[in-house]
Image (tube, rainbow, N blue to C red; front, side):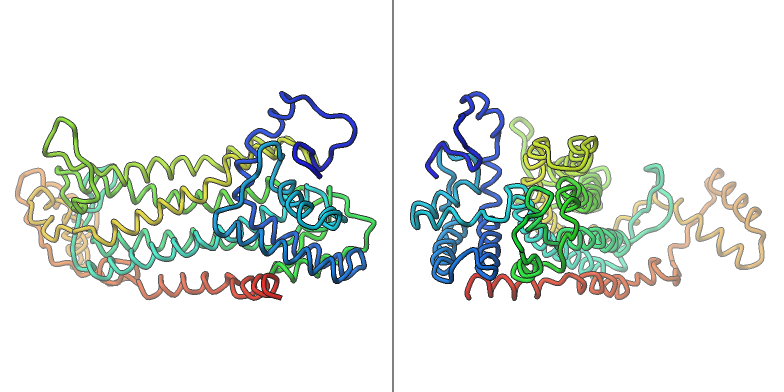
Length: 448
């Protein structure tokens, strides 16, 4: 193969304009997939040798060359040359330059369809792992802050009106527990992703006696996408399901960012952001703007639209492969970096945030202790509705005096945060990600 030849080129060449339009941003997007394309090829050719389509010598030559290309990818030195269509073509071009006709043998028994499928699965799997780590770090920071400030009271709101006493222990802990549920989505995405499509070829299998379980084991997948038609149908569906898991985390982080912006406002004054984490104004010298949390909020809201974007691209496609699916990569592949950046920034600032420990000294918050008084009267035998009316009339008449001694004891309340249970829930979910199996398989593939 030479430059400007496609993997599918025969006698007729398409025009430059058609080539430009059909390739689109593939060369740019495929740089995300380069190291995973190499890993998939290493597993595939190892299997080809086992069924007699490569000699041991050819396999050794190809594996050595592919390891060199993989190292280029890891160093950030891999490029897709001008005139080369995609990552698959570039890898095959490099092999053919180095090994001649041997380099042309690696495509036996596969199609670019299952090649890009396995690239995407391996890429997603690694990205989910990185999102997992950063989500767990934010969770740990939130739970630490919840414990540190468990007894610091703050107002709770409904309708953005003061409602009942809350605490920073509850506030931080609420977002921690939200991330537990988000991690459940991430685990589901991991399990859907961690299945091997390689060997499905163009979606209808191959007449070669491919050993699909062998490539599944070599790449550390938990199982395979067994039905070859379904393996191709999984393109788009996998990305959509993964996008829902990213959107779930993004929803939690966006809400946290909104709270942080609101609570750092001078009219609230509940928290103070580190000065070096805020920005200023070109005209107002006093300004300390929460731009980081505003950008986190916007980026995370954008991420929550990703499942719908993917759905609208692939939702009306029948079974089989269609070029429409190419467009998904443009929205999907960069989304991981955007979410990871938001998680890092949120963790960094939450770690350094300062909490106001005297919010409720301000008498404007006195009325929110009214429910405590109503409950005490009801506990003493006054019918609840009578107690409610009595306290309401006292508030209207300006006679209400709050008792700020709180005695909340039930699970998940101010006095009983249940942070140990929340941590145990997170530990249980995290234990179900089988990272060790992946590590063992890929290390063996790269070093055998």
